[in-house]
Picture 1 (spheres, rainbow, N blue to C red):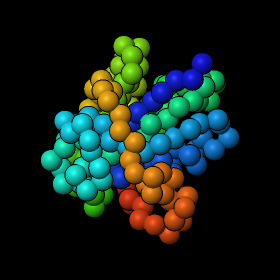
Picture 2: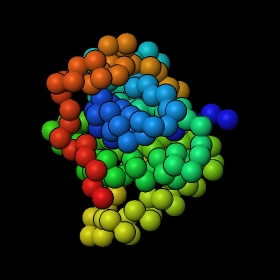
Picture 3: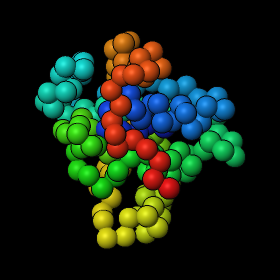
Length: 166
């Protein structure tokens, strides 16, 4: 059975690339888009203005197994970005670049909160994880030119804060 995970961790191009690279041997399908805002018809220009309150996000569709399951995805999400910066990742600043986990079920919410507490204790003593853990709400696919952007444009912009921390 296919499940869905949705994460925001800065510029969605780099988030997508990080998950695709790490889970390259798994059967995942990714798309980038907008979630968590108020505009029912967001586009890149409006989202970047900050007025829509949407986050740039990655949605992952996967079949759970030993390597790819929701707890592992949440932990990887924390490994590949800085969850202690409010509304920013590296040089990208604004609410659209916030750190957020958009859960799709009560079970995902519980897992996200548990893994967040574990990561906070183990990796971020002295700092505070500011990641939002909120219901998923409506998803809007980003424009086609954003999908698999860094795959199509290998020298395209990649946020310098997207790297594995442990």
